[in-house]
Length: 298
Image (cartoon, rainbow, N blue to C red; front, side, top):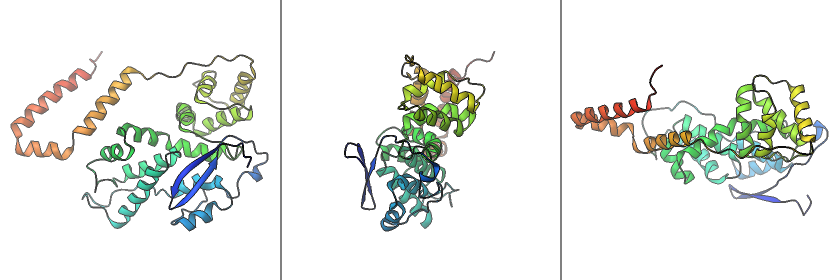
């Protein structure tokens, strides 16, 4: 690796310090893309096992870490206490959430398992409380990571079949998420690889401009490739301004966050059983507030 190549230091994983170069480098020929087929990495259970997995090349590190995330499963019991295997899964996922700040989709995948399996129930009253405590921000950040996890993992695997050292970041993935929702993750991967093939840095701003020239109601791979190449070959390109959050969306998220942080089911049950009159009055007030949110019917 050239000494001029920037390097990104990833956190310690079981005591092993890992460094990973960044920046796209075109690789010709599918045979040289990877020493192992994507999706075949066995989850390492120790530092030596992890070192063995990545020994041929650090390009397998994210896939190895992603393979370490157990799939969400139904909670074994409604009791707060975790079963032994649930506790092991929680500690494993929690460690990935805490240490892998740079690998957004691995963190999102681990958070989805913690949320879907209710693995935080022994130590926290809700997943939102866990997310806020662990990430040091509102629980909304956890949902943002979870939202892009699946597409981020797909792009990491598929785009790097052609561009082995290409970095896939959260902002790229989030920009391509609406396209993937409409036409599948393959469409998002095609947009990204076509942009890289043109020698362009696929910033979120450039990707928004590329998406603006594509029709929303259909997706044809050949037509998409042609449109993108023609657009990127232009001497002058008009890029859209950065996205601004919708004030209404921001307000909704704020209200939802307040409700999630302050209202717990056990508290409601306690009020209902110990103070039934006050509970009925509170229910009336909440219904009145909800009526103000509900738009009038046409």
